Length: 493
Image (tube, rainbow, N blue to C red; front, top):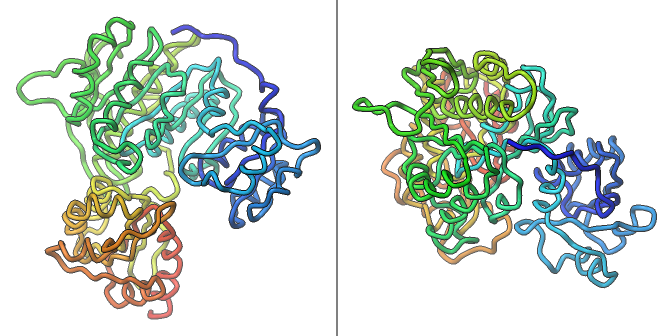
């Protein structure tokens, strides 16, 4: 895997104004720009803890969107950065930038520039990107590597979602939601799974799948694709891309459960046995060449519940080894990378423990797709033991709710009781006939639609009993309900 000299901060990124600087991706980008010596200003609709952290690092942040925000830096910005999804083109700062002739570029283009000269480890897939990326970072750090990284959630150890490291490895989440993953230089990539999503942007499942084909086709010569062979979408991707990968001298390192009849093509790491625990799990894994000289077994402990997390941890271990193998230094043993994952304390909003009151444990998770909801509720079942699982779900986007209402209903039926809030519209306007009731009407288990958010906490407190696990789920502001639920449970005790 070839390496070029890492570039410094280019002139056009020396003074950057970021519209929507408080978003997960944008705030991480701001951290890296500041660490590399750039000047950064930005604006957001409301203040937050993340914005306070950026201010302490030197960013000039304005609350609210106003053309005058472009004057926050001396001489004004050299470029304005925005995102497709969160910021409309009618934003007054974008309109003002156009009037002044200031270039407006998208976040992925900036991140791609910051990756130049690094060996990159990019994690893609419909589900599991943030957890897998974060575990890869933890594994590399445990081995003495200081990678730069940009993740979609905050790592609990460091409390940050991005970092400018001293090493020559850059680890990042490769988001497919708007096709932006195609901009990144790719040395080692992980594909966790492929399942229809973001159809509001792509328009069809075929168009969504195609972006992954283009992504693996762009992996640099001598690179590695780490692929989950359990997933039918990933297996189909490998079949379609086989000729291209061979022509580009790209290896495929497959992982997953072994087929009982034969060892599938590309399988280099197989999950033989998974033992669940209340706060995680332990896996027995067999690893094959070319990762090792001859097949060996090892233990892989994961501090986050669920077999899906065990698979994510296995992907992170393989990818960490692959990206380091592309350098000039000594490659740590797989067991060293696994030790880093075993010590990993998780990512905010990924089965995050929020607290306990009156014998009820409360967790929070970002799950907002039916497959994610199903996986997290399966993990919650293990954590609950003899107790019940109460899911408190807030659908995200009207288009996604309309598209997957029946799938959400089936996934939520895994809970003993489901309380469904109304849709968090985010960037979308309401759609006639689409609400959280569209889901509960199709559920066979015990469920309740609570359209008014202020009535959600009383509904949960009325349902929860000592020994139960309450899990708030969704990509919207449902995360704010966890502390409120705990406070109300505490008053009940």
